[in-house]
Length: 254
Image (cartoon, rainbow, N blue to C red; front, side):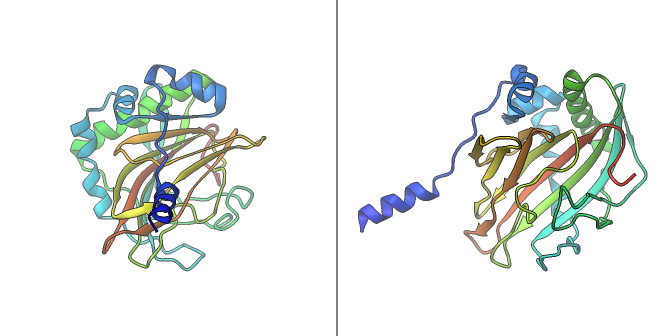
């Protein structure tokens, strides 16, 4: 019995990510198509303090239910807004539907999904701008200075129904240039392992983001990603993330 318990403990052990130093993030994105950044490294990239970032977190307690899930689930809450980052400035774009082609999202592709916009108090606008600007500057190191068309998604994946799916579409690309996934909170859950695969070869990596404000950066043209389902370990668990997608040339869907 003890031997079986030890084997089970090994199976459920979380794989910690190997963080990239902030000074090497551009190099890792260029070399292997992804980088995992610690909370401290994320602050270095964006110029935000820990207290400024934590002040954003209460917004995740006020996310409407995602009513567009084609698997019939009621486990995802979200808001969505769009921005243009150019020459160090951030301009919020008129509210628009989130749209992806079927080639990139077999489950929800071709569907115009109108989510409620993000609610950003005036005293938090500067923090949001630094996050968007900091990543825009990083990506411009790789592609050259240009306007970046950014879609921001606030997600909460809940487990009150027994299971929640962070990526119900499975392993996928988003049809953009770069993707930034911030882990904000894990409460009373198991699962939620992130997997990154080479889009053109057999290579892959698996790990579980656990630290608030740890960050996964992806070159969307080179890698495929997914996150495994989460299950509750208490009465009501959840996983909160912020996903930012950066695209050249305009927003998807025109």
